[in-house]
View 1 (cartoon, rainbow, N blue to C red):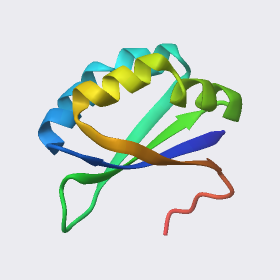
View 2 (view 1 turned 180 degrees about the horizontal axis):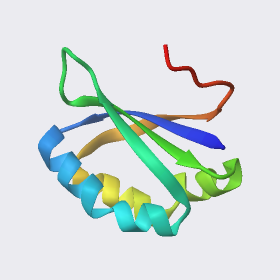
View 3 (view 1 turned 60 degrees about the vertical axis):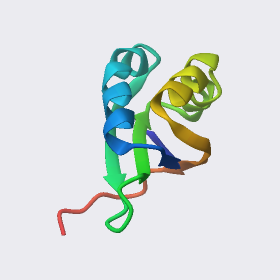
View 4 (view 1 turned 120 degrees about the vertical axis):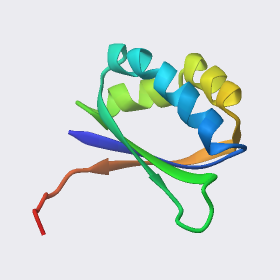
Length: 94
């Protein structure tokens, strides 16, 4: 498994979240295994989205797709997010 972490600023979190949810089918069709949304506790318009993928190539194809760029524009993403591709090393309960 690989994780794609996108650190981004948005114009309005509620608007962004609505578009993100509308795009869930496209993420799944393109290979996403799920996502987590985290938000800065002091600035609700600074968010981190972590999506789970089978492999890095699939995640990179998704992150560079024209469709995603259009969705980000519609959602009010400011600039381009900082992207990091992360390998899962371990999960713990505590």
